[in-house]
Length: 372
Image 1 (cartoon, one colour):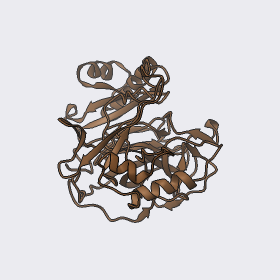
Image 2 (tube, rainbow, N blue to C red; image 1 turned 120 degrees about the vertical axis):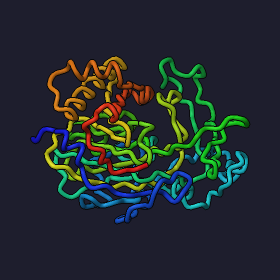
Image 3 (tube, rainbow, N blue to C red; image 1 turned 180 degrees about the vertical axis):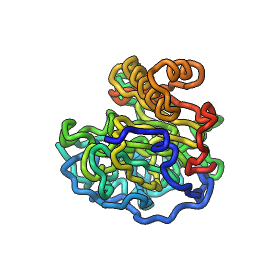
Image 4 (cartoon, rainbow, N blue to C red; image 1 turned 90 degrees about the vertical axis):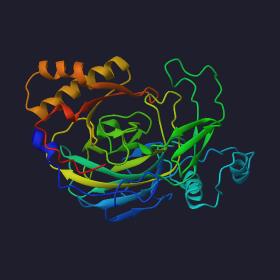
C-alpha cells in the first residue's frame, strides 16, 4: 500500500466554489449528478446491512444530493401526529414531504437482523472502483434542515452516570427560526443552528459482521457525531469493502461536544456531498479537514483509551503534514497548540477528536477547496 504523504492530503484536487441558497449559505452550489430521495427502499433503520444492494453507484468526483429523515417525535399511538405538531406550535403538517417520507420509512423500511429501532439511515451508495486499502474523500457542500423543528431526547444510562430519571422523559421540542438561523429552546434561550449529519460512514469490515449496529462509531466512521461536519468540511474514510458503500443519517440541527443526553437536535436534513476516490492510501482511521483545522479521531469504549488513540492519530497526521519522524516534535507541538475535544460519550464507543490548526504550518499550501 502507498503511504500517506503531505501531498496526498494537501493536493487532493482543484478548488470548487460553492454556497447554499438558504440561511446556512456561503457560495454557489455544485452541479448535482444524482438525487437520492428519502424512501423506504433507500433507507435502513439502526444498522449497516452488508447484504443490502447499493441504492446508487457513482463515479469518483460526482456530487450527490441526499434527502434524509428523522425528528418525527410523535411516535405516541395515543396522539394524532398533526395534533402533536399543533400542540408544540410547529409550523408544519404531517402531509409535508419530509414528514410524510419519515413516517413511510419508519413503517415500511426493511428491518435487517430484526433490528426494529435506531437511526434513520440512507444508503448504501457505492463508488465505482473503490477497494479495500483505498480511501474516500467526502466534501460537504451543504447541510440544510428539511423540517422547521427538531427533538432532543434523554436516554437513561447513556451519559457518564446516566440520567437521574430511570424512565425516558418526553423529547424536548425546539422550533427553528430559519430567518435568524436559531432554535427556540424556551422563551429567552436560543440555540444557533449548525446542521450536520451525525452518521457518515462506509461499510464496516466483513469481520464486524453483516449487520453492524448504527450506534457505535468505528474505523469505518459511522455515528461519529462530530459537530464540525458542517458546510465546507471534508471527511476522509478508509475503504474496507468493494465499492466503499457509504451511508448517512442521524440528521442534526445543532449539537454540543459530548452530546451528553444521548441526542442532539434531531431533525431531517438534505445534504450535498462530493465523493472523490483515492487509491492505495492505506488510511486506517477517519480524518477530517476544515478550512482552518486538520482533525484526527480516537474511538474506544474507554475514554482514556480514546484519548490515547486520538493522540496517536494526531501524531501520525502531523508527521505526514510536516515530514517529521518519531513522536517527539508532534507530541510537543500538540501540548502547545492542539485541542483535544470530547466528540461524544453516549454511543457506547466514546469519541475524542484532535483539532490541529493549519495556521501552525507556514509552508503549507493554502489550497483547500472550500473558501468561506
